[in-house]
Image (cartoon, rainbow over all chains, first blue to last red; front, side, top):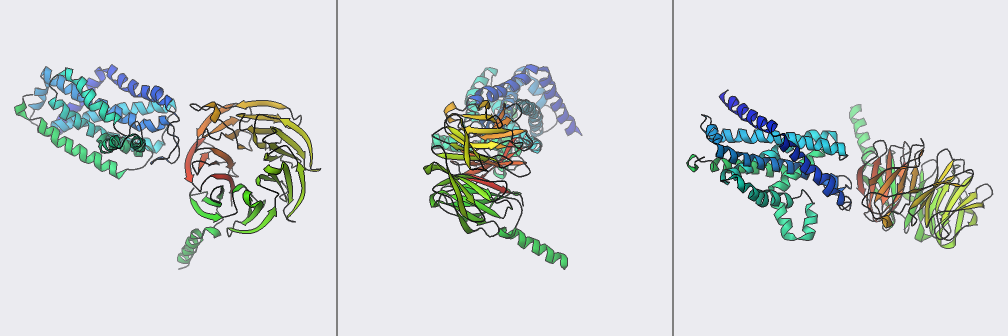
Length: 257
Length: 323
């Protein structure tokens, strides 16, 4: 019961924070929509030359980029939650959280789940707008994509927690953008299929192939078409577990939060 | 016991593709000298048959028992038995037959002989040439009116659609169209004729009675250079709703409203989409994509491409049997 109390408290706090920052919701929506409507428009016919799994036929670039942009929404939200932790620490509310009698690991994982649920809300809203714009997936695909997006969001949030534990000041978030978000997003299968990367550079291809964000994107991509990618699922699950352990270890009391 | 035997019999029937009479799609592969057989239910290639050199035009006999295949470089039209996948005969075709069409009576074939500027009229039961008609240079597409009285041949170099009266086998009119006309199709009510022009990038729609052009349709799929828009195969739904036009190297199929003659949308398919054919129930449309070596399947109700199926090298023509 006390665990549920703690978990629901953290969820409510995150939800309240999200509700009070409506501009954050709109910016989280505008960013991928700009990519979809403006960036992807120029590359519309760029991919109509090969069929890759899970697609059964040739697709336009807008359709290809859709799962990657969903993952981008999850990535930005996950990293923004790490930014909010830095804020919590500066304002002292982190101490209030960590002095609760519940285990530190539970508190942190509750936060991970709470942020993941909000990420899911944002990604679903993006999918709705993309659908209205005419980029559609099968109806069952949307249902399958929900757990895939939740799992990917948890992986990215646990990574955000690790970063949040090490970033000392709010100003350092620009560094997070440049050294975590952008490389993770660009060096993945979100924008281009891996075979295209391989055409350009073998090194780039190898980096992209080992980027956990690639597997998160592919998990969502397969799920959106009602398919299950076992490899992507296991990589995302094991990465989530690994990042969780590392995040909990990063939040040691002696590091003075 | 009886149920088990019945189940086994059903299984055997399913495993023997030659015995199965479910709907099948036949695709002629120009470079492989083969015909790929696709099952209409599973949308998978279930068999590949070896045929003559450079198979291109492919159509079904009226009773759907046989396939007629233009083996262009063998200078013949082959007759293939669908039940066995074996060539059972040949029809005299003149040199280098590419496209042909069956008269609604099921007995006469009209084949365009590109190199000789001729149209050959073939009697199928007698397996003989009835006559050869002089037409423009490099005849290509052939279309026939639903009543079978008017035949159209397009000539690539003359840029013309020749109107031929099938009762007299005489050329009765010539209509000028844009550069390199490729295909000609009548609407199901026989009131309009649609002719595609590959280099011109247009489809001309004619009034079949007055033989006057009603409209010229232009195409501009998003993000595709105008040079790549090269209309080839045309298919018109019998309910008078849609027309589908294969746009060659633009890798798109255009959907046109048959009533307003306006382009509604473009669907992305494989590379260099060439010929298109619809299932008899008009639920699915199959396109042959020459360069990518596959066939794209379009759901006609949803107007969506649902699958692309790998076949042989350079698929050219497609015929569909519903039983």
